[in-house]
Amino acid sequence: MSEHHRGQDGDHGHHHHDNHFTDVEARVKALETVLTEKGLIDPAAIDAIVDTYETKVGPRNGARVVARAWSDAEFADWLKRDATAAIASLGFTGRQGEHMRAVFNTPDTHNLIVCTLCSCYPWAVLGLPPVWYKAPPYRSRAVIDPRGVLAEFGLELPIDKKIRVWDSTAELRYLVVPERPDGTEDFSEEALADLVTRDSMIGTGLALSPQAKP
Amino acid sequence: MNGPHDLGGQHGLGPIAPEKDEPYFHAEWEKRALGITLSCGAFGAWTIDESRHARESLPPATYLAASYYEIWTRALETLLKRHGFVTQAELDAGHMHEKGREPKRVLKADMVAGVLARGGPCDRPVATPPRFGVGDRVRTKNFHPETHTRLPRYARAKVGVVEAVQGSFVFPDDNAHGKGENPQWVYTVVFDGGEIWGEGGDPSLTVSIDAWESYLESV
Image (cartoon, rainbow over all chains, first blue to last red; front, side, top):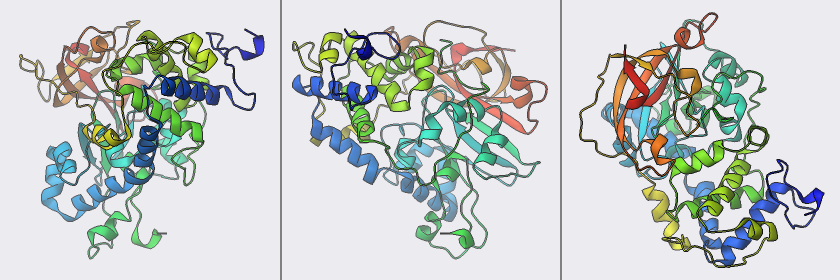
């Protein structure tokens, strides 16, 4: 084992790989090759997984849930009582959305979602989490300095607005239902969904106002 | 365990720096890392709790310096070796040496949609009624196991209020270590910011966790 092939942490890992790969690229390549040779993974299945999260499962799912809740009081009530079933009724189920809970912003309270222990995130309605959600700065600060965190997202809340942080420590996955923007009384569900951003469903943003819509 | 993953309340980890119009993936290898991890999860050889423990057991300096898909990849190597699917020599060589263990199933492309749609529900019935009810004041335990737990350090030995009984779920502290699912009731417990962060904490803040019954005691 030559010294320059040793893993960063010195644990094991001397990877016989082309020098143009970074360490992690080489690790992933070795895994894919070994597992494929053993018949343990199907590269086409990996393509299908990636395609699912690139094109089928993303924040538009959650936006549809929120838009439905804004336009249908009965659905909103169902979402409050049994988010898993209400969301499943729109066709959004499955991995990292098995057990859902929706939390509603109000004039008094703003909700913010975090997973301090790993990266728990409601994949079924928001897709794969962004890098910042999984990284130490957000996970460390969201529970102790949420206002500072929100300021980094350009969101300044009134000082008397309560902040409720939900740490996803179990298997419940949270969806924030932001407040419906003013001036949207005549909006269709589809037009409402266009105002719902991913960040507004994590709590690091608000829904777009009709004027601000890009 | 009091590992590098237990980040709530730590200082000095830098700005969040959200990326405008962040892409789903920042490199090709991230796509493969996601797909390989999910494919291997479908073997049915380990649980999500064991994989979380494998990730949090990385050396702290490695964990904190690694991107999330690198953490996944390193933990996956551990799991594949532990369960006899690959050897370190094979990972080093980047090629198969011997067949190794056969998994219960191999995820094929035509199975992906069904498997992702099914997910892995982990609610399980328990025979006894919940010990706590909505509105009860509870104190979280002050424990520091070297094994897996989902009670974050910042929320230990704190008094909060049970806000909801969420149902009964697989107990990760046991399940991560092959000791069975042993489901327990899970409660949403809400704490005042001051109870957790003390003097100087944001008075408008409340924080909640979802806590298994054995994390809690009556006040």
